[in-house]
Image (cartoon, rainbow, N blue to C red):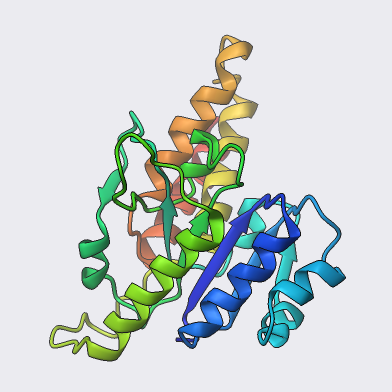
Amino acid sequence: MSSVSFILHKPQLSENIGACARAIKNFNFNKLVVINPKPLFPNDKIIATSVGAKEVIKKCKVYDNLESATNNIDYLVATSSRFRNKNIKHISLNDLSKLDFNKKVGFLFGSEASGLSNNEIIYANCTMQIPTNPNFKSINLSHSVIIVAQIVSSLIKLKKTNYKKSKKVKIASKKDIQAMVNLCVHQLENRNFFKPSEKKPIMLENLRSIFYKMELSEKETRILSSVFANLAKKG
């Protein structure tokens, strides 16, 4: 259970943050991460609505941005009620059974008002939609969290792993991938690659999406970082 994190991106309501803490504790999880919350964190309302999950709030980590919040995540699943016209893997709740929960897995939830943008989705390895009434897709934040928490809890208890990859192959952490991507972006900026300037945001979004959705090993990440560094020297 300690390998799974529930990440709330820009939550707007204290009640929802407290309810999410209570929801994950219901199923024996304790890692709640909050990114740039609108209300003061923590506050009395958050603690009150967390009921018996005050220790989850106490241990909760707060970050200013998504990149730093996912540094230590090996595999990130972004929840979304909308289909994205992006080259990113989409999974269903049933596909959660295929995840390796021996790794550090994170579930990312968007804000109550707007959910997750494409710029936030690109940090994920895949997106996941909770099946709902197609005419009424919106689910309360804490309800989404408790649905995922219940299913993942059941899978961890029941799952038996028969196939194991070689211990010599270590999957790169988000921190390693982020460092590699930032190096790549820096070198491209030095070469004035991002033209015209107004298209730079979407170009960055697409570039990051390519790397973040790949399950690169630590060795592959080091190789690519070396390639980007050497290209700068050649220039």
